[in-house]
Image (cartoon, rainbow over all chains, first blue to last red; front, side, top):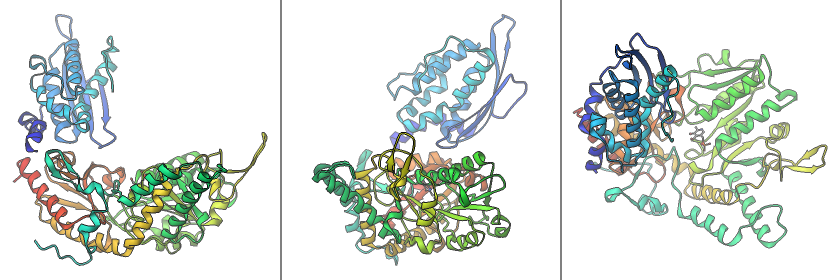
Length: 160
Length: 422
Ligand SMILES: Cc1ncc(COP(=O)(O)O)c(C=O)c1O
């Protein structure tokens, strides 16, 4: 039983939960969104700041957030910011896609550590249907905020 | 620890055998410790068997089938109504209306009040009074009603120890008050409210009183007349009955003055292409084929509870609740939301643990076979009142044992150590 729990609460997740990265709302930002998980009440307010780098590529300059929720939702926000800040927006979207696929894979998707880094720790969460939404809360908020600035990119396949 | 609590139901182990689900095991062969009965209760064999028997031997539509099965089915369905009427002390069986659940019963009242004419009509300047400890099902319908009619929604606040703050009752219940709607027992704080006293005040100003008995009907003896309610709602699945059925009881004088809710088969007297006239209560409010087997199951459920005795069930809940409050008090960093005196509360206990989110508490408990609820329990405003976003809730019922409470307390200790808090 504790084995199953340990698969969910990986050390990496608990570390991010206790010491979240990039937490707090910061300026400047182009968009701010507020997402809630209506079943449990977890909430996140998230801001995105993007800018064209000298090479002309639009990059994620900052993602800042304020959130209340469980260890899974808090840790996933922290991991998200680690992964996308500094990346070209296109690449960040691809990471998002990859995380979504992992979370919706019911535990049958092999995560790509190259792409997902610390986020592979969430592979265990995919086996707990009730917790998938927790893990996705800030990721969905980030995508929503980003798209509201850059407009719809050719839409990535997405199911509920 | 000795489990010789006074007030426990006798032969609890035998009684538990009535509930087949309680003997199943979960992942890893762990026994089930079900502490989520305020969410939904488990079902005794007699309810399951009665429903299966109805489906296997008596199934037919009610009222409109002119054959033997139709007669048997109608009799069983109306028999369910008789049993519910007896269970709540309704002066007349016709005052018992079957709905889908408590939410629909409350919405039935709020909607028909929106359409009412005469002295029940609600408009600008009128007020509806609720409380800050309501389930969303007893908040949202009243928000909709008051928004639609330009009336004002007001509410009783809560004291720090989780009771209704009645200090401004004279300011809240006034000549402008048309409806006072409140929960008898809170599903989050466990508080038992002085419904009869509030009803008396409401009646003095001519308001009608709606009582949400969803958490009261499972654990307190309910006498609708003594309660002071004009209308009272509860839901079948929390009184060891099936899902898909709820009850609205109303005083005949009030029900007769309310317009129909849904239109359709069974609720009419006669229909022409221009207009219709309506059946009397209860059928006026029961359009379409009703939840037949659910009503039959609910009848068996309330008979089962009456057979054990609601006084005895209440005493059992109080003993378990007191024992649980004692046990929870030993867990470091744990704060109970709501009254701490077991005699003043029902069997739902919500709590917080410093440093662990309710979701994570519930997850760790689940890995030990212990089922509790985590979240806002459909009472967001009450959580806000106490400055918390969510909580963990354990809720007991007539089949809960002291050993299960011990398992919970051990599980909470384990949760703290799992998250490295001790
Ligand atoms: C106090 C209270 N009111 C209303 C309800 C709604 O019951 P239902 O969901 O069966 O309509 C519940 C249960 O969830 C409750 O606890």
